[in-house]
Every structure is written in structure tokens, then in C-alpha cells.
Length: 104
View 1 (cartoon, rainbow, N blue to C red):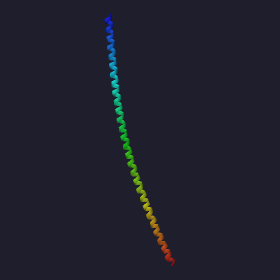
View 2: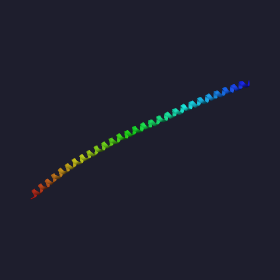
View 3: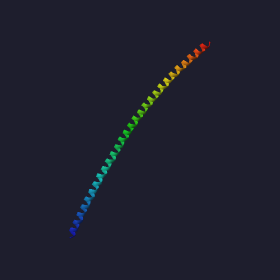
View 4: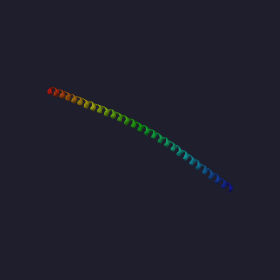
């Protein structure tokens, strides 16, 4: 009877040990999965950061291109206006000379 009790205790201890080992293995698998998920998350964040930086760079270039275009258009408009004003001034000078000549 005592031998049977010892056997049951040993069997119970073996079962408990197996359950503990199974739980440890399960926890290790979960920890490995968590680690892989963290690594995947970090890789995803890096990829998104690179994509964002690329978008920022493209946007910056587009803005610079638009800025240069606007400056060129403004310079052209000023140049045309300057030419028109110069022509008008010359016409006024000629008109004034003509008026002076007619007054003499």
C-alpha cells in the first residue's frame, strides 16, 4: 500500500514536471514569437520612415522646381513690363521733343 502511494506520488511528480516543461516550452515559443513581432514592427517602422523621407524629398524637389518656375515667370513679367515702360518713356520723350520743336 505504501509502495502504491509512492508510485502515485512519483507519477504525480512526473506529470507535474511534464506539465511544467510543456508550459516552459509554450512560454519560450511565445517569447520567440513576441521577439519576431517586435523585429517585424521595427522593420515596418524603418520601411515607413524611408518611404516618408522619400516622399518628403520628392515634395521638396517639387517645391523647389515650382519656386524656380515662379521666379523665372516673375523675372520674365518684370522684364516685359520694363521693356514696355522703356518704350513708353521713349515715346514720351519723342513727343516732348516734337512739342518743343513745334513750339519754336
